[in-house]
Each structure stands twice: as C-alpha cells, then as structure tokens.
Length: 248
Image 1 (tube, rainbow, N blue to C red):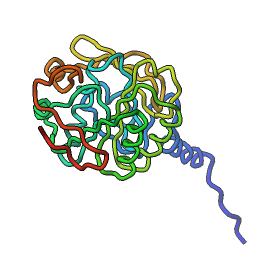
Image 2 (image 1 turned 45 degrees about the horizontal axis):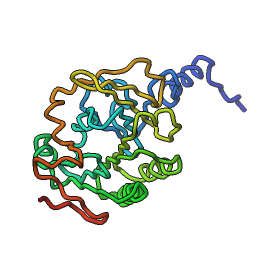
Image 3 (image 1 turned 30 degrees about the vertical axis):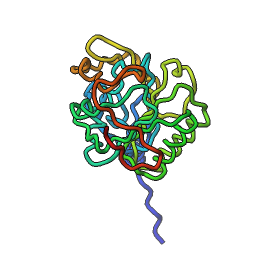
C-alpha cells in the first residue's frame, strides 16, 4: 500500500496566497465585492468608493451642510440614467421639483415620483414600502432626524431590493452612529462641492475630495424653497400608491 503524497510547502503557500488575494479583504484596502454599483459620473469620487460607484441595495447617506449646495448635482448623472427606464422617487424634498429643470438635466419627468408625506414617520414608511415592492429604480429621501432603529429598517429594506437609496441628512448627523455602509459629507466649494467620506468599507479617506460641478448655477433651478412662488411648472405631489405624478 503506497503512502499518500502530501503537497509541498511551496505549493501550499502559493494556494494560500491566491486565496488571500481573491477572497480576503484587508482593512487597509478599499473593499471589493460582488455588490452591484453604478458610476457616480464623477471620476475623482469613483476612485475613492468601493467597487467604483454608488452601491445598489444599500443605504447611502449624504450629509449636507445646508440644502442646495450641490447634492442633487452630485446625484444628477445617476438619477438621469435611471429615470430613462425606471421611476425615481423624491420623498419630502425641501424644494419643489421643476419640470423644465428635470428636462434640462435629462431626467425623464414622466418617471419622477414626488411624495410629500405629512410627517417624518409617513416619509420613512413610504420609503420602506417603495423599497419592499421594488416599484422604483431609486429613492431619494430627505430627513432631519432619524432614529437608529429607522436607519436599520431602511438599510434592511434596501438590502432586499435592487433599488438605489440615498438619504439626505444634516451634516451634524455625521457624529452619530449609523448602519449605512457609505456616508458622505458635503460642503460648498467654489465651482463644486467638497466631499468627505465619513464611512466606507476600507481605510479612512484622509483628505476631502473636490468634485467639480460645472453647471452648478443652472442646476439650482431644480430646487426652489417651498415658501417662494414657483417660476416654472412643478411636479404635483403624489399619493403613496400613485404610479406617476401628473403635471400642472
């Protein structure tokens, strides 16, 4: 009876190295996974995000110093692409979405759903329902105060669907713990925005990233304070179960 041959130490080490290279994530490296991502449309930002873009099926937080500093400009390439084939839901935005501005951004306004629930609880519930039923390709939710339990519910709902989810919150929330795998702080900068990656899978991003937004002044047409009289047609608010809002 012949003895079973054993692999040499060299071949064993080579196999172990291959496993380490392909299947093990080191905290000093940006995470790479099988998760689906979409390019942000901003090359410098993509270079710093795991898998090179916005993650799908995950809660992504945008923490803004104030509304209207360029957060929608940052999302414009992604939203424009998604709206060609799928609905995009805006839930409790602080400004009125304008039809002409949507068109100038190449957003398909027929696929833009604007929800204006009466309370934060209703807004969070609306976002959960959209995520669970998969009726939209993307959800952008604005909230000032969100409890940790609500964040967990949103993240779980996002993980169960093929929808992109962005939660826009005040910059002060950066000091709070969050289950979100990607948290980005935004501050105004001349000609664009200054981006701090507060949390990502991988090493800490040591320095802010400047993201140029070339059409920033024109882009602010999309956002108008509720207290101002609209200068253009606006998308009408829709009920929770509506498919597509009518235009006025």
